[in-house]
Amino acid sequence: MKIVTYQFIALLLLLFSGIAKSNEINAVTEVFYPYQIMGADNKLTGYSIDVVDELFKITGDKLNLSVLPWSVAYKKASTTPDLMIFSIGKNKDREHLFDWTAKIATEKLYFWTLPESQITPSTKLSDFKDMRIAVVKDATTHEYLSKLDFSNLYIMGATTSNSDEVHRIRMLLNGRADIVIAVERGIYTALKDLGMDKNRLKKVFRANMLDSDLHIAFNNESNPALTQKYRSAMEILAHTGKLTTLKKKWRISE
Image 1 (cartoon, rainbow, N blue to C red):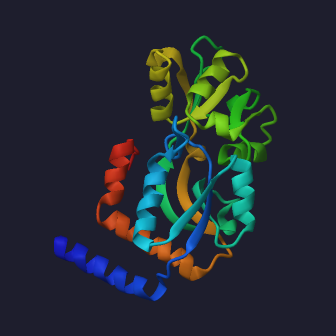
Image 2: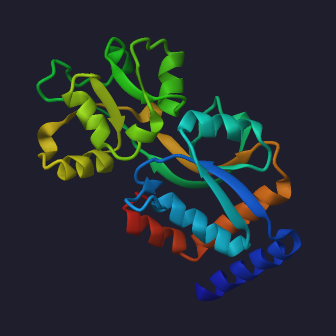
Image 3: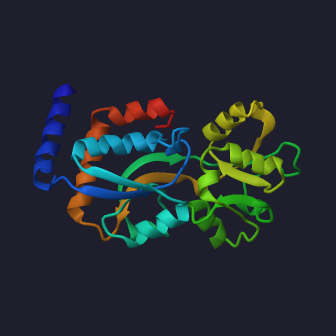
């Protein structure tokens, strides 16, 4: 296995010799737990940050990263060649706008509500159409539900709502929304941080149609040599086992 691994890396490094010119790469992201987390020292950390740092070690490029509200980051990335964006969910509406350079995770989403609410579990998305569902502006959840004429959506500001799931839970507790959308790990971690039992919220819907493959992507008009460089770097990261190590560190599901 080691021989195959070394041969694989040697081939990729040979490929790199033809495309790897060191550059300053502009990138945009948002605060999005647990992928991009703003620490108390205003330093960004998280699973995706670790992945991107490792990719830049391989390519030798310099990262110029801007942390923006999601709608601003998304608009900028969709109109600016050679601009990197992460962690961005892939869907049909966005597919033609970006080069989906590297898949880094998959989010399995659920609808959550308070146990005392009158909302009952269902396997039909349409049963929740009249509920106040909290979504981040221009996120994949917002785009998808809006296309289905869910008109009672509660639009959240991305920076606050994505810092962790505590804000979403408080939104339910304060009666600002009936349902929030989140992964199990994020909700259970936030409930623990709030000193609450896991049963303080209940799942009422497995929103598999809203599951999102998160990517590192570039604007679709970017230089092909640039996107290939990072695609190759991601192959090295995955093949050496470093990507798996980072997933275990941040408890990201394979």
